[in-house]
Length: 108
Ligand code: HEC
Image (cartoon, rainbow, N blue to C red):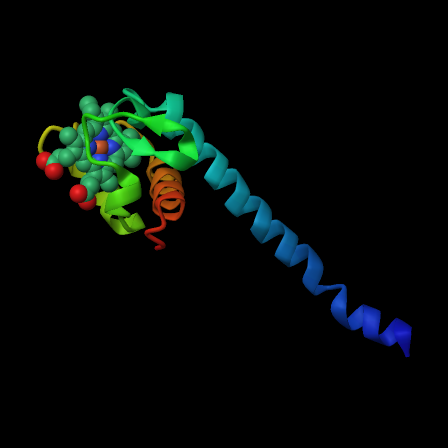
């Protein structure tokens, strides 16, 4: 009885763990880019409490709460006084879009 129940549950676990890992790695990459790896780092100009960033040149992302799509569009094209980040890889842009939208509470 117990053995049957366990074997029914076990196969689902590795898939869940792998998904959590991928998301965790993307979040970590997004945070690193935000704080220091992007050139110039977003933190220089933006406030985002989750990243301990208190830049005041651009709008506070905690207040704007941009969606991932909004972040991605701004990074690809730039906006007003903000430069485009067109040298970032697609993976890095995605990592930033996911990280910033979630950290700021903008969801997807
Ligand atoms: C040199 C300063 C500077 C840097 C560095 C910078 N930004 Fe910006 N950002 C701005 C300014 C200024 C605006 C507002 C532009 C406007 O509205 O005309 C802005 C706007 C934005 C917006 C749009 C907010 C809205 O109103 O929807 C997002 C999202 C954003 N920045 C994300 C980022 C991310 C992510 C990075 C790092 C990859 C970054 N910014 C780096 C200055 C900067």
